[in-house]
Image (cartoon, rainbow, N blue to C red; front, top):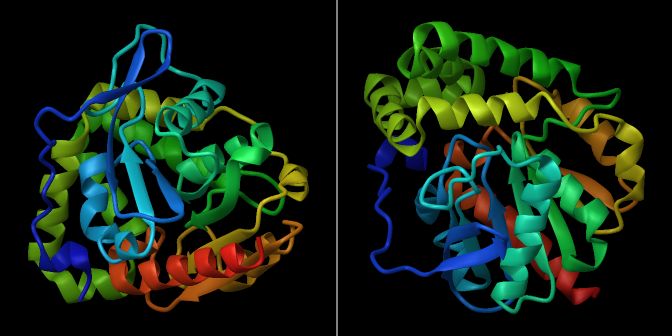
Length: 287
């Protein structure tokens, strides 16, 4: 059974946790656990730093896992002008600098796979490897993902967050998890979803997702080893398309997770962490 169906999510923030200054006027809430090679988890506008705990607990036994709230989300700073993709990338590097991490593996999920790509392109020396879970990157562009995001944005605008969750759940969650977790799983994850963001935060995030570069040729310029982790029930990419996407990276490959959806670690947290740990160990062994 999935972690999301089994457990209540602990979304509490750690009292007295320091914020990390990254840019002028910006301080990020972060959490760090474990020791070893650094792995930084990038949020996808729907989740916050505490949400990652139950999906990285095993990984933190062999790596240093860093999670954080993006600027204008969660417990991090609010600024008047919504950050651009470039500024979010700058925040990632600022976080690494403040934590004295020379380079790290980045885990992107859904929309934040675009952020992972952009960090790897702009700051290649800071990225040891990329794990792209449920990537929104496409073989010819990102039109399909942006169409889906526009529909979510319209639902949020006209019907609110509860309706948005009801629309997203069967699109993002695998059919297997949907059947297995039933109504309790649906309601449990909804509670977490509603607690992690405000309508304004989601509106800003979904609006930003409509922007940025879409050219798949950019992937050929990424130097870091790249692992696409794809659920075979992902709404955006079929297994065949996922493997073809991985082939666009100079050093890319695809790992399939059976009976998993667009956010595959929700379906099998332990399996996802094992895949990431094996990838990190392999990259470090050849570094």
